[in-house]
Image 1 (tube, rainbow, N blue to C red):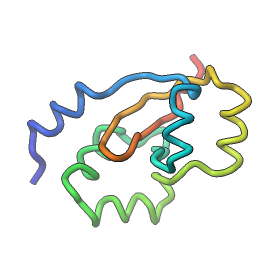
Image 2 (cartoon, rainbow, N blue to C red):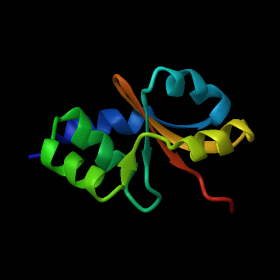
Image 3 (tube, rainbow, N blue to C red):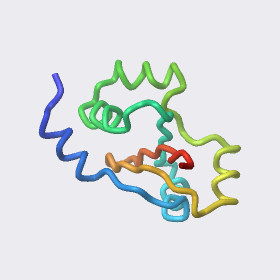
Image 4 (spheres, helix red, strand yellow):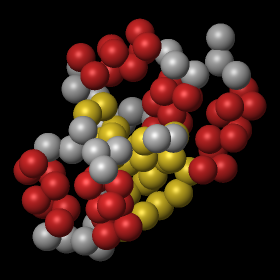
Length: 100
């Protein structure tokens, strides 16, 4: 059972950020990449409410993961790359914004 207040609370934390701002979080291994097409709020709610089964399922399907070395290299070379972000302590969920 999902707590509707939790979703509302997390919605307020939804933001946009450039990679440059996210680098310190990546350095402390706190960044989790959410696949495009997966609702970043759904992931945030599942993590915040400790929904282990759902989170493990997404990990198994590679829909959420730590950034790969390739991704980090690509993003470090384009520090203005923009992401949708959601802070769910101690993690920062990021989702690539697709170019318009």
